[in-house]
Length: 323
Ligand code: ADP
Ligand code: MG
Image 1: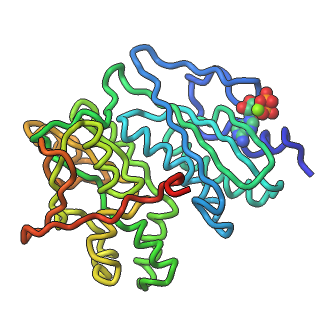
Image 2 (image 1 turned 45 degrees about the horizontal axis):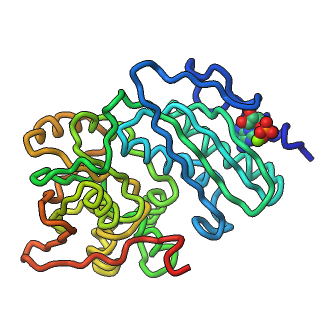
Image 3 (image 1 turned 60 degrees about the vertical axis):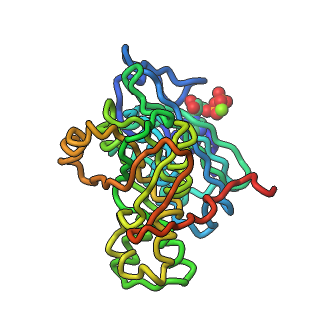
């Protein structure tokens, strides 16, 4: 049986991207890292616990991808460029086949996003995964939640509701043909952090957030932090062909409005910057859709094209509500 030290050497030392700003990576008491001059350091951390965020049957490669992806999504929402990650792993036992696959998912995404794995911690206990990411954003240019102003336009990247649809498919409440089934399960298991989009929004967006708990809830956080309100034209919400094909069976606009786990970016942009925004997004793999306006009146209003209002479902999972 491999020792803790051997496991770290085998699966985690020197992994991810090679970066010159890593003075010292895995192996000492602490990593030594160099933040470039003129940059602020953006830091985010997220934990996924077996039985809470994923089931015991979850594919380890997808878990490795997702625990890094959800963190990178937070950096994207700040307009930060990722650089480093640390990994705290709590494992019930040493399962090398599991570690191999988990590492493959994590390191593949890390390399693709130029993230170096620079340290971590390994302990025994119920399976829990924690990643902390570190990224750079030019001093003063981070995109915060609190900058939305009345008159700004509200946008969202990509499509909404696919991850929620994947849950309905797994619960066998909705059936999808093979290709659509695969594509929505991929959206749930392998979210793609919108890093290029976040960088494109620097200096343009007045506020941004990543959609982890559902559009209504997360846009609500922007509105709260900014002391404003918004109207969203529900029928403008971008949905995939897969979701369109089972739209009514999947609950209509409830998924794109309220389902979590899509990891798209929701942001506001002053109206006079609209042309620049379109130009900045023109060559990106995933674009953005205008969905509404920021207004002085607080609160979120979700309207259909006939003028009637939709009340979004209660926001996503709150770990401490009612506990
Ligand atoms: P210490 O007791 O000094 O905290 P550890 O034995 O926890 O040292 O870790 C030894 C080295 O291995 C450290 O550099 C630490 O950052 C790294 N490390 C431990 N676990 C992991 C992991 N799961 N992934 C990446 N690096 C790790
Ligand atoms: Mg330690």
